Image 1 (tube, each protein chain N blue to C red):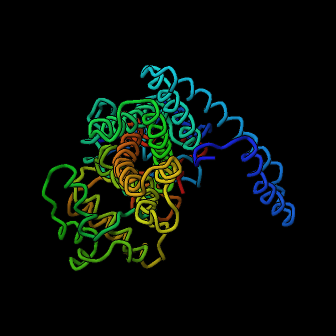
Image 2: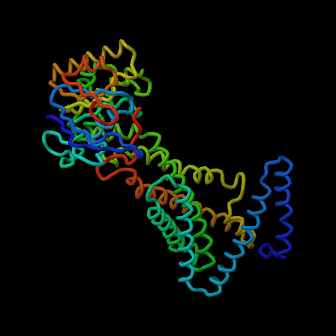
Length: 208
Length: 258
């Protein structure tokens, strides 16, 4: 299900972050690349309605995202934020959070495996993980809802090169095994080329 | 002179200790002399004015004036708490409801239990203590809620992104803010009588009550306060937390991108 942004303007803190942006993000792997402050993270958060635009429309599957139930949208279009933001408790409690909120059973071992973590991580304290491990738990948390699309905000910005390569391999593997589409935001041009079928560049809130 | 008859001469005599406070400030160059003098003067003027008003109400012996004074206390308490919790949007009406609920429930309880007759000389001071404590607890709880929403915005948004409603995302924040609002009174109740005698007990003793009666009266008020304060803090937060979110379960002040 593709996304489309039509003449979208978004402001934050009095500053125009996206300025009349129009773009289509097809099924598959899309990447929005650009320097810091270009509006990439804001664009991502429009796609699952963590924010609404000040002008213009965001469409998912041809329909305005505002016409859908916002909770259902967020379960179908999962977001992995840039920085880990796990809750107190075990890894299993964090991973099962989304399904529990949706009233569904959670397959925690499967979600952990898909995110490249051993099932033994389930009982670990979420507050005592390395940054790389936390990032993978965030990924597992999103995957536990079996989303149709993943939104990834700078998924490897906090990681060293080896961890970055491992996470990229996991994302490519997820595409291959699950047919999962993703929209990736990154400032790393190399990563954009390695992971995406289509790369869009934005600068100062507009397509470059 | 009985314990409850104090003349202006005695009040003037107590100014000696205000002079001590001013002297300490001058000695240490803390530059608080002006503020201390203003505080003492304001206390004199405000309490004297309140005293005249209360005397009029007591003499009129009409409950409608008592309720009017309590309503003024609730309004002033609401405005004060709102001023202290400036970072919390839309707090006025929730605080008004919270303080009204605290005052009504406590005064209703002590009258229903037969502890007091519904008379001005009981309702006014007890109402003041309840509303004052409820005001402080509500302001602390709301402030903590505002601080927590700001500090944990990323975590809240990550929870919303998993399909949580605003209520589900705010649940742990409300819990920790409620604790902040209630812990001071709980600690005060635990240590009451060990370090200082609480106010109602002191007032009762000065007015000539037997110590046992003064203690029991204080206990009734302390227990009622625990309930009233928790009710006020929870009510204020329950009616306010949604203001941090839009109807579409979005944070009104989203976290800054990193």
